[in-house]
Image (tube, rainbow, N blue to C red; front, side):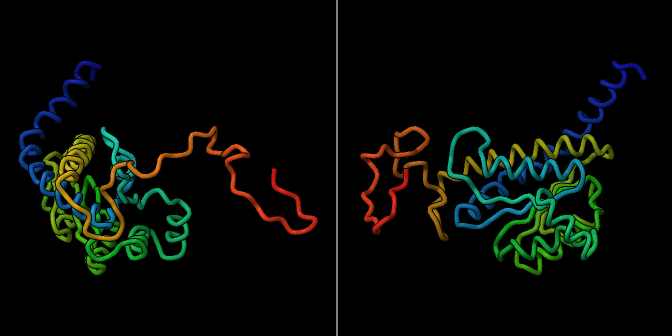
Length: 234
């Protein structure tokens, strides 16, 4: 296959998936509002996937802890794929299928949201994680390839990309990640915190000290009372 034919074939597969994806992706606005309300109230998002979907789970949580576009208060989101010591310990001691589920039981709380990403919707470790999330009282969502699939069946809601090509599915999962974060940012200003912590506060706390590296000059440091023979810190 020539370079041009390869390019055309891939873009054709992508374009064929877009009409069905557009319909499926309409739920992201509602998901974004629900996720914003959860995070603003002190809740948390947990995300997981395998392979390329693991990278996309980390991409999603990075956008929430960091930012998508405009600066805002960081939001609590954990990618269960990123803690390599926990992953390998759990995999070694409990088996591959428990790699995410055990972390869900550790970090998830009732009312939190669990988002699982899979092109096939058949990964056993994600199915086990979804069951753990349900038993914990979390809301479980999924990004998958074509439905029906086992992961879609065990999650409360699913955004299923209508393409048999895993690359196209992952590409539209990335679009979904950006849209979801955009909807979260859009919803946050309309919400007030309902749980612990001022989750929606802008960076309007006390200004950091204007000293180089945050170290106060000697005259600005608090006075110390020294014991006999004790030297003052430099």
